[in-house]
Amino acid sequence: MATLEEIEMAMRRANWTEGARLSRELLMGRPTDAKIHAYEGLCFFRLGQFDQAEPCFMRATALDPKFVDAGIKRCQCLDRMRRYDEALALAREWIVHRPGDPALNAIVDVHHYRANPRRTEGWEISAQSMGRAHFASDL
Image (tube, rainbow, N blue to C red; front, side, top):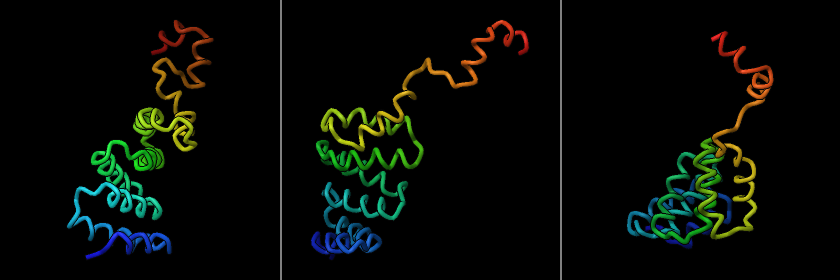
């Protein structure tokens, strides 16, 4: 059975594959340990496997709702998977707990326009300035 120390040692050596394997092994005996779920997620994150990392961070924060670091990493996973609306919504939830976090602030700053239902793309602005009636008649 793997130990927490073995996982941390693998992570210090940047052996992310081994860290993920050891995390899964340890989770067999400790399925409710949020830290181990987060370690597994971090290993997948460092491997660039964001689709595998995201559910790990989701489990970690479900087990420990105050686990801000895991919440931030989940936001980053969603952002990297181009699930921008989800990343933004989640970042807004976590930013309350850590308002100065640069990763959360970056996600909110970059994607905040997506939450505006009245936003328009550049071509729409040009079309509006030409008059809506003209384009409506062409449809």
